[in-house]
Length: 220
Image (tube, rainbow, N blue to C red; front, side):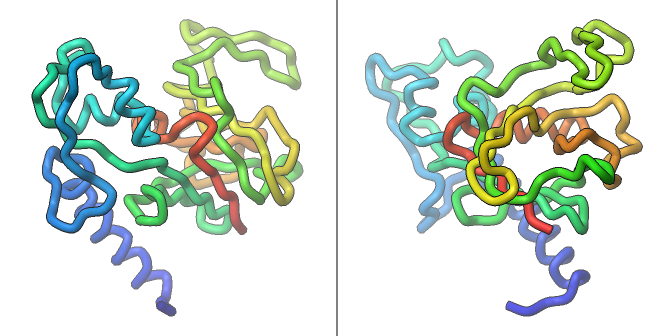
């Protein structure tokens, strides 16, 4: 439906609040096609259940309040989420919208590429094997290598590598969604082209996107 920015923002805030109830809790509501109950069978692993439903196993651990995956027991009933999750990034508003399949979940503020190194538009995919926690990183400009223990480590809490599949993004690599040590740059164009999140938001997005399946669409 046509709506102005104020209306759109208000609706997204309301939907984000509702997601805490229908998605990020143990509740499963009638007629919900994205969440359901699953009875654990002998031999089931949380990782195999998550693979079947196209979500990372960490989000199933969190919504079911399971402290460790090995504590999953045959015969118990858990909540499962039918993925995958995807995101859309809007360069004009420095926002990232998170979706479960085609259903809006919530928005995040992001930092994007600075002039001359703009974040390319088009469709990306989370690179298989590209999700890492504070990886070793070499600056392509200065060739200095950083580790997570360095006080000036720039990548923050998480790294989600992307591979371009269409549009300006097609065939491009070296871009990622990641945290930051400069939270003041969220909402601005200051990166080398990567998509930056506050570290807490980066951890959440990392727990939801699935390697090889989750799409990241960058729009003007």
